[in-house]
Image (cartoon, rainbow, N blue to C red; front, side):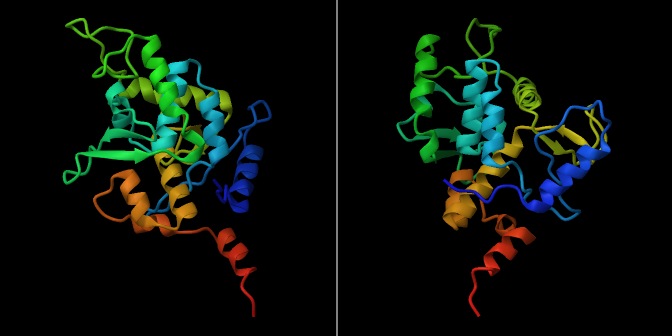
Length: 240
C-alpha cells in the first residue's frame, strides 16, 4: 500500500529540533508537530516508522502486540483483549469499547499483514493457550492460577521502549516524565491507531471504510484534512 509519508514541513521541523538539541544528544529518527488548539487528526507516524518500531521489539510477544496495533488500528485495551478464538483467516475480532451500538468489530487485515493470523496461532500453540485465554498474557498468574493479559501500562512501556530503540520520536502534546510539551518524546500506542486510520482514508478515499475498521459510532471528518505539501503536489497535476 502507498502512503504520502511525512511532509517536507514536518521533516524541516525535525531538522530544526535536532539542531536545537545539544551536540551530545543522539540523533532522532523522526519528530512530529503537535496538533493545534482545536482537535484534528494528527499526522501520526509514517508506515516505515511504525515498522521500524515493530522490528525493535525485544520479544516475540511484544512484536506481535505491536503488529496487532498497527494492522488493526485498535485501541490498546482492545488489542490486549485478543484471544485465540478471535483470530480468523483474514481478520481479528476485537471488542469495540467506545461504541455502545457495536460491542465488537471484525477488523480486516491489510495485504502486508495477512500472515499475522498464522503468527498469532503459532505463538498461541507454542505457549499452550486455550481458546479463551489472552494471547498477550502476563507471566504472572491470576489468583485462580489462570492467565491474564498484560496491563495497559506494560503495553505502553513496550511501545515506548521499542520506539526508543528505533530512534522514532514525536513532539509531546503535554508535559510528562520525558520532558516538557513540544519536546521529543517516545511514541505511545494510540499513535498507531491514528497512523492506520489516516492511511486507510488516504489509500481508500473512504471514510465509511475507516469507520468500519476503527469501530467509530460516527464518521470522523477530521481525517479528511491534508497538509499544504499534499495540496501543492496535487495541484501540480491539475491542467490549465
